[in-house]
Image (cartoon, rainbow, N blue to C red):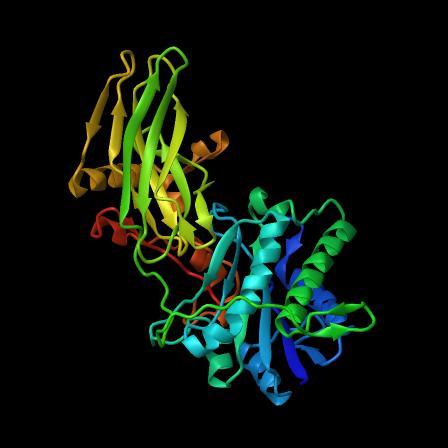
Length: 408
Ligand SMILES: [Zn+2]
């Protein structure tokens, strides 16, 4: 058995991809791809091609046409991520929605994600996404599937969030390069295990490597289109002497799982940055999480939380009012009307200054993963267009706030 693999360094030429500080995505993806190819070239039974080996632009169609022309068995597109307001963090892998293709890519994606977990990166999941036509949203996966080539998109991590950039040290170009080469080798190792390859040169034999499987029994492995169903907060205890309030967040997403949460103590005007929501496994979240907040003397708290699922859809909680002096509790079990009022308030008071205090305004969190150029998207969306687009559908969907733009 001999495999043909096409590695696709995302972007190129005038398609920079994400760019921030020392990070230029099109260059980073090329370094990862070259390292991955070099590593895999040490194995028998595999031929590896790159869609581009220079700084040149390519359409998605050209990338897949190339893969088809060399009879690729798998197509792997390499990327780094950014979000519009720099709030999101973590690694994610997009695979085809059609189950037969999903099942073919899943064991590889699982191996790649395990490496990211070991590196200390946050797991945003192995996911599918559909476009308006009901097919794969990302062109790479849509055309790949049409050509009969199982494909995936690896979003290694976010270039614009310090929770991830520890893996991309950029004090010098050589420090960044060696980090990227490390990503390429790890991705290559995952592929070698996935294909059960052997390398006499490296003294490695993965021929009996045991792969994980994932079977859903459905024709399409659909993404979660709805925000978490439940986000309820309640008081556990107050400690007036210490100036602390402990609350429980009860959050459920029956279609997927919770990734992040954030907290406001000023009724939703400002929120903390996103925090890890506890999970028992990468795709199974806990239903309850207790947190302790500062309650300075003389300050009334209006606590409200947001929980975000793996598709970046957010649900706000009820408001928990904690009176200042006595710290007596008045739990407003609010209906949607009241929540909407809070949303409207926070939307009108865009807390620009709050960034200085390491909080994000409520509005900021509504934005979603941006990344990539219009050429990847189903529609025509520019990078800047993505960044400023906020979906205000929340006003009529009650507590559910939607967004999401991404292109590949
Ligand atoms: Zn990209």
